[in-house]
Image (cartoon, rainbow, N blue to C red; front, side, top):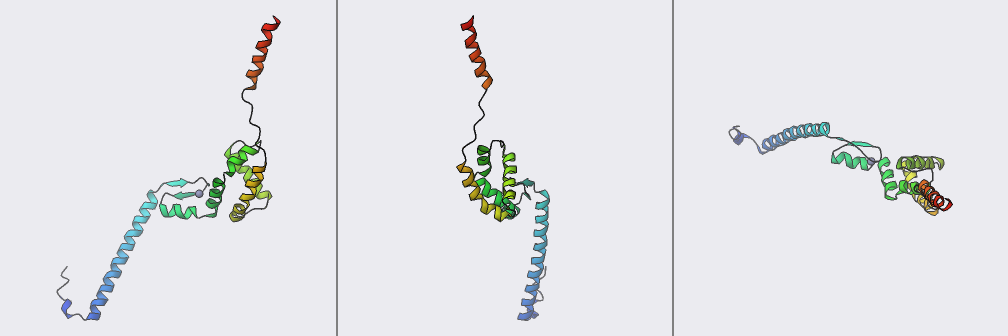
Length: 159
Ligand SMILES: [Zn+2]
């Protein structure tokens, strides 16, 4: 580029104006390039399914904004307080984390906690409630074998 040739005739103001225009062109050119790079990144990024049930593209900004959603924050709080495993330990009919989730959803509903924030504020009360309950009885392991052993003991005595 023969940039230097005509410059001597330009006023200070013209030079400044030219620089502004060059900067602006370069800004737009870069903006376009950044946008295209971002789109490519988005297209190639894996979709992550979060523990909370939500999904996001595997890009740190998207992950961050997902983690700020009410849905995720509620799940995070439930996880931190160990709410689902706690329900598994306390409620006889609940044996899996999925069943615990159903139980939890019912509890929120029964107590009229419908928004993420109301649910989140209800968690300490739920935790206290469940901690007061005794642990459910663990299923006795292999009771049939015990019966058989007793029978075997009896048989030789009678014969
Ligand atoms: Zn999440």
